[in-house]
Length: 191
Ligand code: IMP
Image 1 (spheres, rainbow, N blue to C red):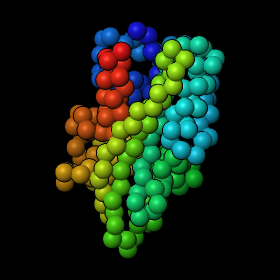
Image 2 (image 1 turned 135 degrees about the vertical axis):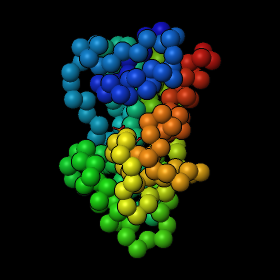
Image 3 (image 1 turned 90 degrees about the vertical axis):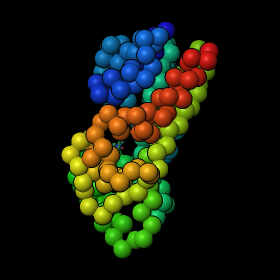
């Protein structure tokens, strides 16, 4: 089956494609000639994932899915959450985002956090949501050089290393995104 993944992030495509296997032909936005900057202005991860999937479905009339991820910190009432990419103001400035997060958590005992990924799938004109969560905590300073975003300050439960220290292979096995994609994969296989 053909499925459009509403992303142009080659890295994500590869990661998701490895989980979905050969039975799914994954197409990027570029592959369907979509160069639009798809709006993601909802106030929840679910809302954003659905907004992106619907945008593609309405215009290209194809089966498709989109994802959205956020870091939810318990002591900050779930922030930065849906605003994770632009927590410090400028989109995708990971260094500034991490510094802001560490500052907000200064003096706080509770460092519990989780990454949550939501995938919205539109298949045969029906909508489905899948969620992947990895629990963990925010440490007091950055550690490790791999990955992206908040990886250097996030230690997943059961590990002593940060995502950035664990490296991509380990991270991709246990990550929020992998868990959400596993659920999508299971759903597709059961159909
Ligand atoms: P997106 O929805 O995948 O674009 O993720 C939104 C933002 O969440 C990113 O810009 C990162 O700041 C953060 N983020 C998402 N996934 C990860 C991850 O696996 N590690 C660290 N940060 C992440």
